[in-house]
Amino acid sequence: MRPALLDRGRRVLLLGAHGGVGQAVRALLAHSVPGRKLRAQLDALVLVDGDAPGSALVSDDGNLTVRSVIGSADDLAWLVREHGASSVVDLSSLDTVDCTRTCDSLGCHFLSTSVEEWPWRGSMPTDEAIARLLPPFPSSLGRRSHLVGSGANPGIVNALVFAALEAFSERAGVAPSVDALALQSILITEEDTTSAPATRSDVFSMTWHPEHCLEELFEPRAFVARDGRVVGLGHRPTERLYEARCGDHLIEGFMVPHEETVTLATRLANIEIGFVYRIPPGARAALAAHPERSFVAGWPTRRLYPPFTTDLTGYDRLGVLLCSHRFGELWMGFHTDVTAGLALNTNATQLQVAAGVVAGMHQLGSRRGVHFVEDLDWRDFLDVVSEALGPPVVVHAPTAPVRPIIDRARDGSFAQREPSFGR
Image (cartoon, rainbow, N blue to C red; front, side):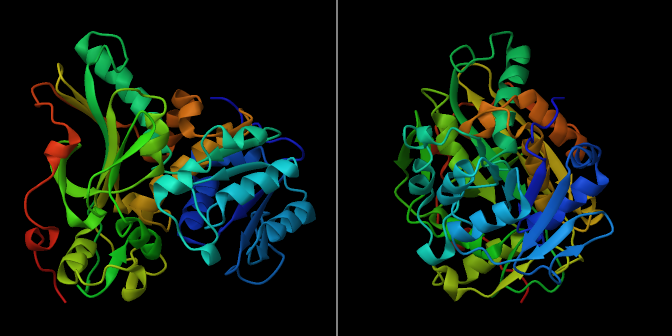
């Protein structure tokens, strides 16, 4: 495993450190093998959050906690200078483009879990947001290392694609390439079964930031990507279900716009790439019961993670599905039970995201300029993830028929297909 390349004092600002993902990352840094290895290499970890307790507090583990609301690039620049930061890890919702520019100008590395915009600017469709960070625009940002999208998805799934190519090639007896494997498509698939008692169908209950999830689900169009080009599917994400394998069984989920579908498509030619997401049962039932609520502001929400909800059951299964014209299908991914998350005071979903953050931090600084997880050493990345989540699961279905993504759409509206849920 390569050591972290965090230089210039190895002082890290962890932004959003007291949010859901921040709590999971802090738990892994303190209690997991890869997290402790990484923490031992740092001179200081500064926990920054607008909701942080107190101000400028030093905890028992030596971390400095700072209460600060970051509303602009100038606010971030002040914090970097004030604390002599060598790296910024953003687990909040700051503008990714502005953060990379600011950090690069100050000689500071930057890592984010996704592509975001300032809340006061309003969100933009995913394909437009990620396009701001694709070549040739970011070529001027080359002083330091800027790793964009190092969470679960984007993040872990990007690395899993290359691991799955090798696993598929071993079973098929051909080279680990798109052409040799005769691939039709690659699907990122996720099934989240997390549930809690007293879940109401008029409340959107989610295992990560509910409002951010709704923003994705209510984007103007579902899309897939091919050769780096976005192809719209003619409907919004919540208006149709798609069938795909997730582990040892099939799921029906939404085709959700995501950054990794676009960045992976710039590397893998002549195939379709999309993300099929089966959201938790309570959230599915709520959307089915209230199809008229097609905007974020219309929804009351519930957070299915500690400390907001601790009585949780279920799992989150996340991976990649390679679909071949000749060799069937191969799925590779991680199955994380809620109990694994609760042991670290988080849930399964956010534990997966945190594993991708820690894996990205291990390689932060290994490349200059703006880059993504598929540009890293994917073996080292997945080694770290596996230390946190356990080994990945591989399922090969050699007789599975090949189906283009458009042929996976299910008939009938989502609202008609989903069962009612307890109020």
